Amino acid sequence: MSEVRDPAPWQKRYERMLVLALLFGVMSQYLFVGADAGISALLFVLGFYGLFFYSIQGRMGGFEKWQGRVSSGWLLFIPIFMLTLTYALYANSLFRVLNVFAIFALIVAQTALLTRSSVKPWYRGAFYTEMMFLSLIKPFAFIAVPFSVFNRRLKETKRGDATRSTLNKVLLGLVIAAPILIVVLSLLASADEIFFSWMIEIPHLLGRFSLGDGIFRAIVAAFFAMYTFCYIWGLLFHKSTDSFNASLAGQANVPPRNERIEFDPITAGTLLISINIVYVLFVVIQFSYLFGAANGLLPEGAAYAEYARRGFAELIMVSLINIGLLMCGLHLIRRSSKLAESIRKLSLTVLIGCTIVMLVSAYCRLSLYEEAYGFTQTRLLVHGFMLFLGVLLVIAMLRIWKEQFSMGKAYICVTIIAFVVMNYMNVDARIASYNSNRFERTGKIDVAYMGTLSTDAAPALLKLQARHPNLDGLNKVISRLEKEARADYKWQSWNLSKQRVR
Image 1 (spheres, one colour):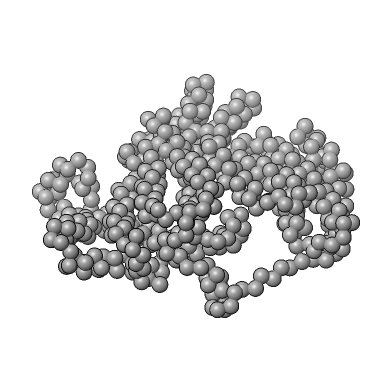
Image 2 (cartoon, rainbow, N blue to C red):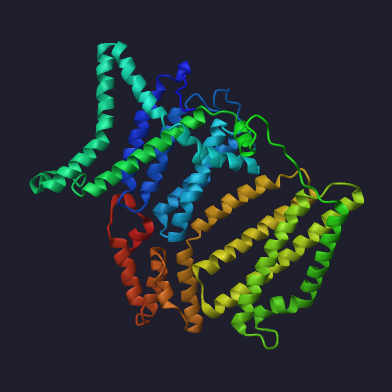
């Protein structure tokens, strides 16, 4: 599988791909090692796309001709670059971690679509199974290819013209020497202070290197270079994914069977109707409590905070269960007579209606809890999650009555959009603003929690400080944010949120 294939139009690009991948690895370690991700994330993604589009130039869609079947792949540029840009705009630590996985997944999906490395539709689950294989397993099957390309280059230089052979040897020698020089220079700088003083005159390039730092940078550069080269190679020279699916089924030469589990419509209809009866009664009987709680009308003997907290958690759990039932009702009930179909659709519609009521109630309960105890990142994200679930339920409602509607496409698009929107909500800034406004109304604020927020919260906290300069602990929080913004500042880590604090 690691054998180098030799289609003539692409023979001359292999060595250049390898050289560019190595340069990409060197750039990657310079951008990220010893520096927080900032504007460097955008430069990294641009560098990857430069290598990717050079490698697939003229080969969109693999060996087959381009047929325009990957228009959805181009649209993914929007969320990819919007999420990448957040590293230069915001400082929320949670989204900084989540966006690493989100950007990676979106890039894998996009590059697979652009090269047609999967025959499965992008809105089917099988497509994402193939994406995991394509990104996490397949690249390591080609780990020997870069060495084969290098070895073949050495053999070809023996029979090429003298000038070209010399230039190729020089270029390859420089590329191979680069990681070795990093380690050697690090050793020499650690061993001799005079040599180190000479090196430090080179503007901040090698002066900060130590032995451990140099080795680590070489490893990081090699990883990015090798993985990126092998990943793109796997996109260019992919086999049928059917053999992969068959191996998962334990039958190398026999395609896996696609058996569909279906429930009898009568059994399923009975189940849905019985559940809906309970939900309708629950909504009717408890309606005054569910929404009256927001106005201070609590059940007798119920504690204010406990009522809000427990009610919220229980309703969210029920809503998730209902979504599971909805999926089963849409896909696992056998179609039969028109009457049975009508019962199925009406039952699922009632189920969705009750679930939406529960989500609205849970939203009100959480708002009640926040009014009593303030806003936190978790509570604000849960608010967003409930709104997201509500949109999914509306889409499901449409799918019930329009069989030809692709719910998978809509769900994937809505999920990507929702994730991007949550990134650009600037959660920490909203928390600081909401809690400041709450302090103006109630005189209550958890300054200690405000101190756990990122520099995104600084503008709102500075406004609060201007209005209440003697608020206990606030000056200390703002001082910490200013210190965080100025600590270990490097150009790669440039970030608008921290720049405003500076």
